[in-house]
Length: 284
Image 1 (cartoon, helix red, strand yellow):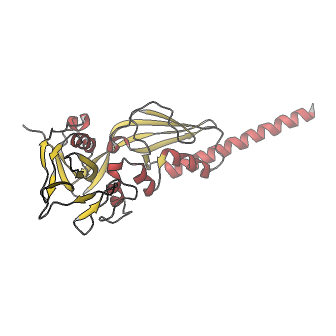
Image 2: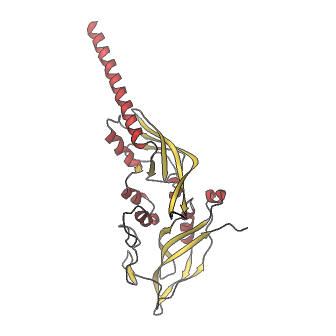
Image 3: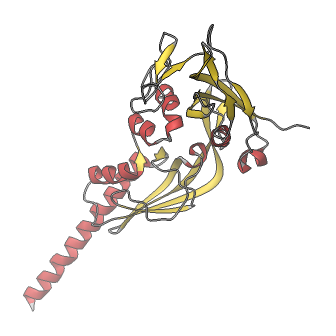
């Protein structure tokens, strides 16, 4: 009988010890991540998202505009033996004319994330590793996880590369100091200059406002750098000057449908890299 009591007391003390350790770990995670703005590796649109510990998405959800669904500010983190739960708000982004950078603001959209654990988390390092599967924590991962048209802009904005260099792995190289560059397929791409005529738009439908921008009466100009190939089709689009609130993606989707009379050099159609501005404006 005494032996049984000793075993029960020991088990009870062990349970208390484990509980205290879990509480300490939860506090450590909150101290490190609470209030931080975290970048989701996938800008999913659902208000409640579930992942497994490897970062695999368990929720069926479409991806949305990066400036609207890509960032999340944590407010509360709860840890149990079976899951890690984060609650907070999404951040929306608008381009700030003063700073010349996208600026975050909260628009009231709550977001809850649950990460299902295969086993209880044993350390803060293990928690960081799991969160790193869901969020892009360092600047390099932020760039790599962003949609391709955003990567060059973000790499410059995060000061990972100077303005005249291209992101490694991007389909679109930056213009060199000369007048000709090579595309990913080795084809020559020119700049409009003496001897190279500018392409002319022959089909140019206006892109639609995003619903959020329309409701907020938000307008402005998206700057894009694109290659117009020798067939007059738009290729290799990248963001040069963002606007935010989903309008960048609207501009991207719209310009993909544009068609041009191609640029020429010595009477032959050639591919050129040009800057294009897409305007979103409300008319009275």
